Length: 327
Image (tube, helix red, strand yellow):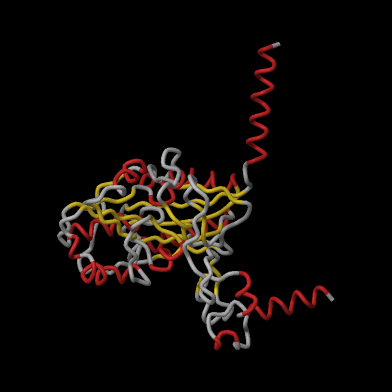
């Protein structure tokens, strides 16, 4: 009887797990590895993705691959198996989030010169030079020290909605702005321990290597990025404030699981603490900005007077459609 009860309990746990599992997954991955004829690979991979039914954005360059896609559990399992069957990507690491729906609306696979557009004067190969990789636990211990400088390796708008405590905010709109920013702001820290982090790790692979080439002596990076840190059962996202910006329909996701959410961003219009990012309703602008629900209505989700008056203002068109449906 005891054995039967044990089996029944196991079945109950399995059933509960299956019920809790969400129908979609979001995959985030990258690999720095030579890809010959990357344009041909990109075309072929786009065809494959469309046939499989996944959606997302993938960049293919001579130096490797970087992607984030969404699909059903079955589709994403198949995608991971197929990509790993290529010897170049057999050890690729996928970061997985569960989701109730697709995180993208379309499927893009774009060939580019670089996986991340740094435009360094001298190329940096992360397989040859990169910062020391820290596990989530090692990172958590290091950022509490007094002799370190924490540098956010993302763009300013990503920092705005969430970041590690005491991290330096980069005044950059894109990765290509970093070299100049480093020379203007970080030279004073060349003799300190410099810790860098980004969303999934791809940017810091090269950014930390660039810092080493620029003469920084002691450079570290958060291995696997914020995504891995937030999922780690030992750190639970500790010392992260706000949310993490992501490049899909979710826009932002929580990281710190040890405390109540700390909202650090402020509404673009009224200055109230808020962590909602919206796109400007002017389709010719589309600027992302933090906006509370009240101001979204008041300012028609538009970042300027000009955008509010745009003839194709999406906020007005959406509300007109809703009013028509209600009649």
